Length: 309
Image (tube, rainbow, N blue to C red; front, side, top):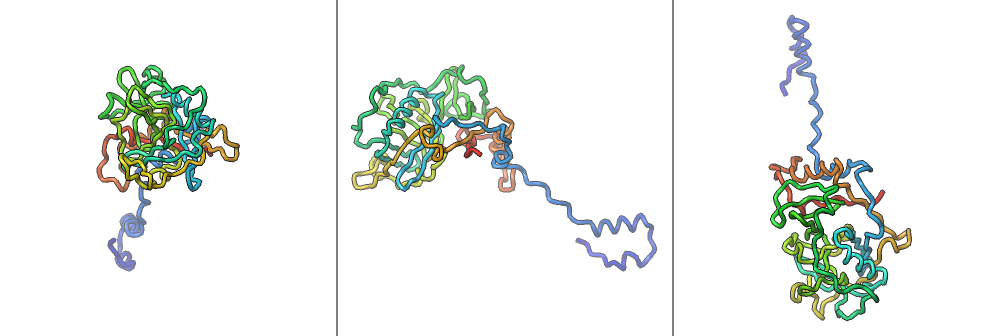
């Protein structure tokens, strides 16, 4: 900044208008810095209560593993009612209690269930579910928010009912994104029962879409799963010499005592808050980013979920 001694301002005659202008140019302080451009986290934090909806307690599977670490899985009955019904039956029966996490494959999945594959299933639980991994698109047209960017695995993508979806002209399905939970199965036509589950812990293996049932997503405790030691057996299975992580319990939140029952909310994808969030995920212009991408992948727009307030 140019420095002008005070006496230099007044040691010769000058017009009052010129003197006032010169004083203003010297004494003015810097204008306040403009607010930095918004981030996706800003869109989430400023979303009003009306932009959130509660997740029903019977759509939350609460699994506790060794070390009393809690994993909460949001189930998706609208997308796979058959497998989710089986999962609810298994949880009510306490079937997973005493089973274990048996497979941790780096950049792929964590898988759990009965390592012996001999534990009897609850009486009457269907075991012949069909390998139908997509739902009619017409079921989801109400409230559908389309993602206007190309996708490598589906003709169209978007969001509905708090979930990301991939679509073609007739069907919609849940994608294999990070943290999403699928049903282990043998070769087709076996579709699995829901007793063997896995969670994606690596880059989204979208080639599995419509080949394996996706039944939900982990909304709490992903670090406890992704941070487990990798198995050294084939495709990440733990060998007989390796420690299989015990599952202490797995229950629906609706079956837990009120004091132990977790509660979560998911952002309404039809809200203006989600529109802001989506726009900012695709066009980062905050201080860290040099060049906005101008687009975003379906799995890189995780629908915000938060503990209920």
